[in-house]
Amino acid sequence: MPDAQPHFTLETKDGICFVEFSDRKILEEIYINEIGDQLGKIIEEHRPINLLLNFRKVEHLSSAALGMLINLQKKIAGQSGRLKLSDINPQIFEVFKITRLNKVFEIHDSAAAAKASFAQA
Amino acid sequence: MNQPAKDQHLPLQTLVIPSDLAMVSKVEGQILQQIEQHHYSDEAIFAIKLTLEEALTNAIKHGNKCCGDKQVIVRFHVDEEQFVVYIRDEGPGFNPDAVPDPTSPDRLSLPSGRGILLMRAYMDEVAYLDDGRELYIRKWNRP
Image (cartoon, rainbow over all chains, first blue to last red; front, side):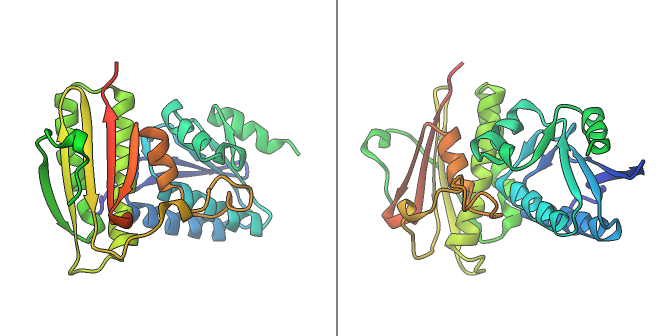
């Protein structure tokens, strides 16, 4: 059964939509599709969006989650928005490195650093 | 079903599941419980969990096409030295050598096709048997 808990929290401040994932695992397609749909709506509601996805609590992530992130990035690029990721733990960062998606996504060590980078051109 | 000669002595446990993605976490849970009982490292547990997710999802989605009357057969062995699993679907099989490299520049922005790459990166042995209908995986438990 799908988890009744929300998959993430959203805070909008200073023109940045700050999303922090609540789940320790972003593995299963059922959950990933829900997250993708929910974030897709947020992206549409904040055109062009400055979206920061924080992975501080995330301990596991599958290739389906990577696919969801790629689809979100395409949507955001299509509206000239910006997507940044932060606080990815070393094990998950290794997944990004193996798939070379660390070269595709803008990844920051901390949410603070990612937020500051939005202010830059 | 295939079982390489070097593994003939290994006692295998068998789980048979329907082609339902909701079953993936149940299989993972049963296997990971035994992995944890044998004191695998956190890194190995991370790798096995990720691999099982990718392998079972592939078998259900791409092998059996989520077809309700097709099953996935999971045979596995866990001890303090190694984890071995065979995952068989009822699909037509495929040629793993024909799967394109998802890290090539022209495929980097595609949303799918990374599961096999990740399994090969994290496991010590990955092979497809019976024309791609069965996946064989081994992970040694090293400190």
